[in-house]
Length: 292
Image 1 (spheres, rainbow, N blue to C red):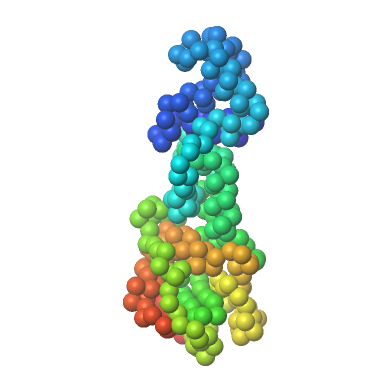
Image 2 (image 1 turned 90 degrees about the vertical axis):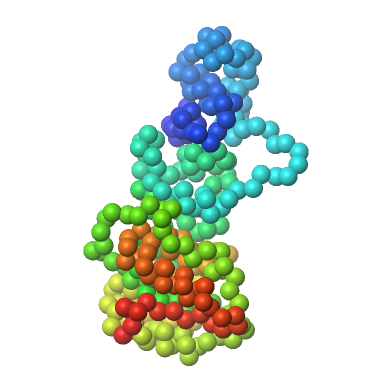
């Protein structure tokens, strides 16, 4: 048996979200891999030898996916993507003895398919790292978990989020559930139809006193003024690839930044600006302590 499959099935046997049928199937496969025969295993688990043979063969043919119930007629099962992302941002429990999530192990923990988990990760542009950290799949990748929101400029042309990467923040992290959220409304603000080029220029110039080596820009496009400003300042620019949602990545970055009190305060400041935003206008917000 593949070691990752074995770990995922062991997680099934202790999961509170899976029913007894799934737990028994996991035990059938795990005990079969240990060499227990169908008759003895059936007596151990309180089922028929044919049940043992059926699920052994299903696993041999289709892997863990073969242990799922056949789809029923009616409304299809929906996956709460935000819940998948939030669980990805929690460190794996010690009982799993792993440092980072795989799609199979997280799927087993949530009681969903590993294909669904992998799809959410791709859609949100994230890759799991050790200890519940994630990498944002920008170009180049952004994997700084200790960051503070310094400012945001968002108009009809796109968005620019400025973050200050910190190396001296405390290691004690707030629980994921306790961190501030930007919410789905952030991705559907009415910004009007204009591109606020002058506002963007002023927004960037306001960071002249921020060390360029620590400043990162998370952008969904790279207009000339952003590229030129970044070159002059020596700041790095992380571009969201075509086909991925910049607003979703900002929402993930908010949860990451919210791990520390100073980061959480900066995210809460942006959240207030989102709530107070007036329709038909660009959104320009700057952290009070980030002003030059």
